[in-house]
Length: 453
Image (cartoon, rainbow, N blue to C red; front, side):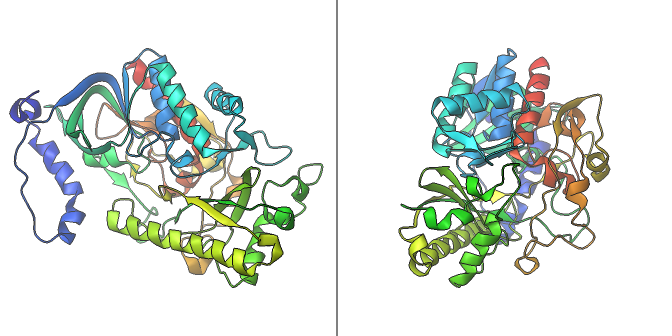
């Protein structure tokens, strides 16, 4: 146990920065309450502390531990995997490019828990069962010797006397308020929470004030006893593809027509349903617009609104869809809504649109992103039409480009790194590198870098 004075030393400036980050919440509150000073127990000291156990955090922590670092990983939810598990994503995109990818796939295969996203000509997209992915993530961390703490949220960060380094991260959990010391820290929260709490600069939303932002989605799992009447609605159904892998039926369009037929106009203009396991299907059919990543009230409202929409869609299809939809039932909705937007923490390099369109490489390149600029609708009225000035053909023009380490190192701090969608980049590039396959590649590269010091 250390005293507050001994632990914090001359870190009042850092504390003020963290308090400023909570300014929005304070304005909404009824006045304010000063918290009494108290001692904060230090949980431990590590070479690397990773905040966030999603795809990027998993890859960062496991890789750093395998490189010989003493690693701790803290995760707010009750499982590792982030959007893969708590978010029920059920789909790996831009995958199979690294040994880490292939290990995840191999471990899923041990449980018979994955298949191809399309029957042919697609070796980089896979469907998996989220519950088995939880186990795979836990096994990989355990085998690598990573200390994992679930149900633990990052609540603050303390800088050292120089102001250029984080001395400790503060967390909140059932164990109370605790401190975690480390030599290096990695923000893998997806939303850039740790960097923001530490006082780092960041951007969110479009590249200019007032620009629109990408929506969030709440994914669900559904079941149906007999799917023979809805095969054309299932995105990974073999009969929807020709021998060369080209589409015979656009499953998204067919599903949308079915929804319209029963009186549903989904908030997502391109609803998707794909088979995860016999009689079990992922259901991605909603958008929630303009949901800030730093506003718990807005996120709560969006989650509950999305859940009501998902229930309504499943109910309408089961009651009004006819024999083809008989027995359709909702199995579960995701524990967390899936944000496409995020804080983009200021790094030592900012990934630009030109980097993507020209397929640039860098001396400190960590991995290659081959995914297009995946922009979703920024409002329900747009129905997935891209914003003005952002041509539809941009995604097709994007070329494989590298993610440099400099974009994964905080500009404002010397021992803070980032991995995942909160790295330093412009709005349009983030629509490409935010996919989980690239997040894993970034995590592997950052994990090696922080282990080396």
